[in-house]
Image 1: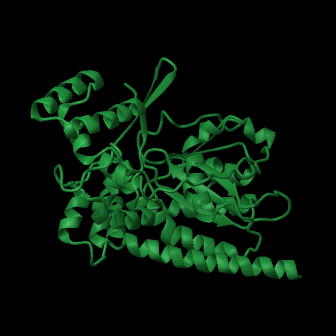
Image 2: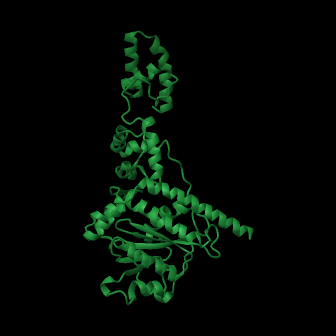
Image 3: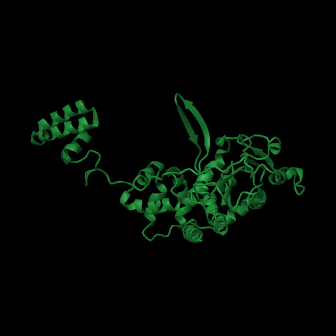
Amino acid sequence: MSRPALVEYLKGLWGLYKKAPKRGKTELLDQAENITGKSRRTIQRYLAAGPDRPMNVRIEGRGRNPVYPAELLVPHVRVLWKKMEMISAERMVQALPKWLPFYKDPMCSPEVRDLLLAMSRCTLERLLAEIRRENVARRGLSTTTSGLRALKAKIPINTLDRQATRPGFTQADTVAHCGSSAAGQFINSLTLTDLYSGWTLNRALPGKRAIEVRRCFVEFKKQLPFNLLAVNTDSGSEFINAEIFGLMTADPNYRDQNRIQFTRSRPYRKNDNAYVEQRNYTHVRQLFGYYRFEDPGLVVAMNEIYERLWNPLHNFFLPSQKLIEKTRVGARIVKKHDRPQTPAERLLASGALTEEQKAKIRDQQASLDPFTLAEQLERHLQAFFEQYRRSTTQKEAA
């Protein structure tokens, strides 16, 4: 029986049920059970409440009290979810133990904290359904131009996926902050992400000149908490050039055992660099949007946000998931992911880091407060976009 038919049937039954004696009520309930297939208790609850109550609305004072009352938990879940950059319920469940010790809301009693920690993913998903907003994604322009043909022949095609059994195998890409036009000069963001752990670094560049990209790679190599073993890029000219090729493979400052494996993905195959393409959205577009940034003075502010706030927030406090299995079942593809973990947790559990590297990660995490990072991020972004609006106004007035 369909739901509309069930509702109409029970509405018609309600009048008879109210007037019937006790024996008659029993017969009507037996008949309703056989016709609707619903349990006797469900039918009794509906008939006791009246014909105007929707079947999915709980009767006040009946049934057991909810274990996770929405009116008590939703205000705290809303704040935490927004501070966590609106991640999924499955990732948020794993992040809550790291964030709650820093959550200072006086209304969040120890009992509420216990409930937040005890919630399952499904319970949290139901609470998030009340506050989740749809985000309409935009698409940016591609500014990738082919690199030198002679160098492309020397750089092998590889995605590094099968080699990423330990930290150090990375993918890199650039994001153009060009707005709706790729003409003229504009700022770019360089993203480097580790395939094993998801550890990600970002830097803003005033352009895509080879010397600037090289400088960023040298900086990344110093700041990574693990040894940089390999880099995979697309075939763009910002990567396929003598500066980057020399840094990776032929720099006299590198000994053979310290040289970086340099590979590239197939042209026009973005899925070959899927890890860094995903971070281009979560770590760049979700932060700075699709605006056009031309003022070189914005680079310093962007790098301060990336280095001091955004990257630490993601690397230490926002868990991510990795795809571990993909199976085709008929026309459907069933994907299986691992337990959400932060990049820092994955690095510490990898077994590939030295004790000195592990201590560096633990010390850095101990010095950070996720709520402080989130609050400072909001202030810095507000100041950044005020600076952006001033520079845009001055350019239009000139």
